[in-house]
Image (cartoon, rainbow, N blue to C red; front, side, top):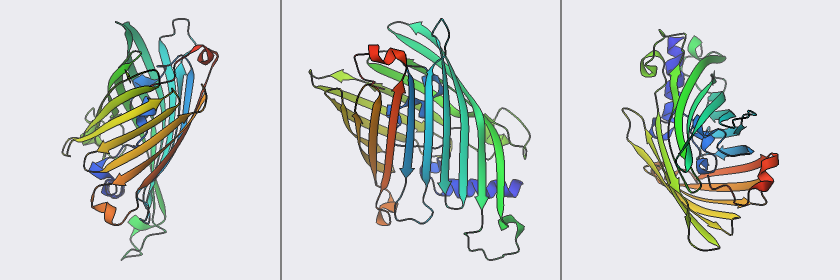
Length: 307
């Protein structure tokens, strides 16, 4: 079992920039639940998103990601608790990872905004299939058929938001239980996973009646790996169309667009121009996202969702 977990770990980290083990997408600034469980319930309505990402076109076995997220306020009188669900599937070569997470947040009024604390709990299924691999020793049991491992995981985060700005910090995998290791509170020691730290923030500036400007940033820290920073800039036109660009250090430059067709439905697209040496062999990355917001309170909201 231990050898198998090591093989999966190598397969996953070898294909992810900066040894990123958590699922990462480019349009996270349009749904903070992708990064932080404390984001759950930050709107008065229920919000859902469906995303598909095809990475590094031109590579055989390149990553493909499907992600579904939904969140909203819990039906309580106080309206200070949020609930959310994330389901994702990430395929890389002969490996496949499926995550299912339940998210919970508790909000406190602070100044002109709210401070939210969030927890998430769920399970990840890691699958290794050797049927499409060319191996030197066909009798090696390590590469015989399909192997699967289930790992319970727990994460946490904090998120402050008001009308025009937000800031958050999260640890997507705070604890994980691996039957092949002794259980402990140091995830870096009791599993093949590593603990990631995310710091996010953004602000919406009103330029005039037609244009708004939204700069934002994401800092990703992983011990024993280079610090990675996303710098994003989006322009909102007539509260309907987002046009933006993003720079991810050591990885890619991203162009993106999102169209808010009405108060409920939106659709977005992002294209990553790879800046690493992979650009010599890949034509880039495509990402499509559709979202739908529902609930009786959404018709009362005059302004679009900024984050």
